[in-house]
Length: 363
Picture 1 (cartoon, rainbow, N blue to C red):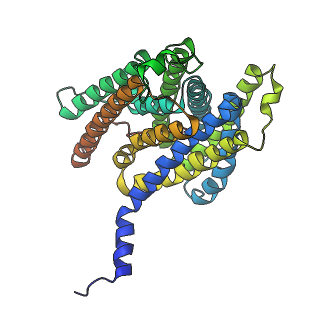
Picture 2: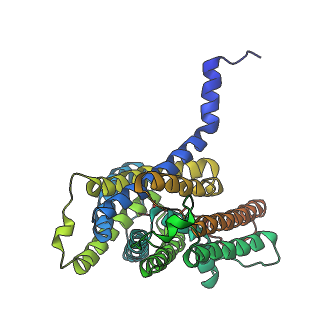
Picture 3: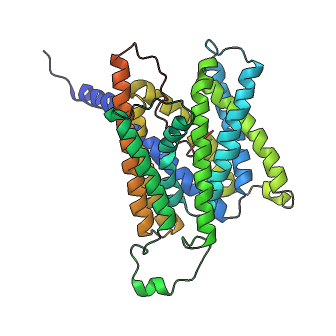
């Protein structure tokens, strides 16, 4: 057998690690969205206006791809499907994105990215409540998901209730620091944490509804385009009501207030959506979900450098606990999916492992 040339070895190596490179790039791109968006918020941009522009740009970016790539598989639009699209847009954009970005605006980018890791656990919990997910507590896979959900939610609660010292600062320095809007002990921080949780619930509800909608409308990218379009319309109405006394908030400057929605709409809602779908087909959802904590690490590093955010011990410990819970849920789900693949007679539907999209989040 002839020995491979250097170029052939490099090509084979690139093919083997392509999914790793793509997921690494996705998480870095998503982390950039958190930091750029927070920069725009710090410059006074309304989170309501941001959601409108983001989903409008995402619609424009996704529509051509959906039209050409899914023209042979896209089913006819019906009144029932469109009503489900309106519901999807409400929970994912109007509820999920608006509350998530409001929560991030009142807390910090690193805190928000850590809390978003609890979305898979909240999704599993909602699926149990509405009896959409099987509950076989004697099976180790189910035990892993249940324990992971409790651990993840416990970590999120720890982040909200426990501040801890600022890492890298002396005790004397912390005693003389003035209070500010992003102080974890203040009302703004607690309110922001509550809004983040509400946003996570909205995004989780979206994934549950999406699983049923895709059976009736099995054109994933076209469905995403419709959700972004309807979500943009719904959030426009919300913005008109909420910002009626501040019409100037609609204006954009040649700075992060323009770059943030363009970046989020094109990179995290369009390119990331397409690449993530490719990797899921190549490796499966477990592989994709396993890279989610990388985003939290990247956001934390970038936020400390560019936003000068302060890291508190409670946020670090709570974030790590959330990640542990996430991996327990992923492990349980992957074990369950392997069992389902080997037993085709099993008839009960299971929800897929989902990937948070505030980055996407969404839309």
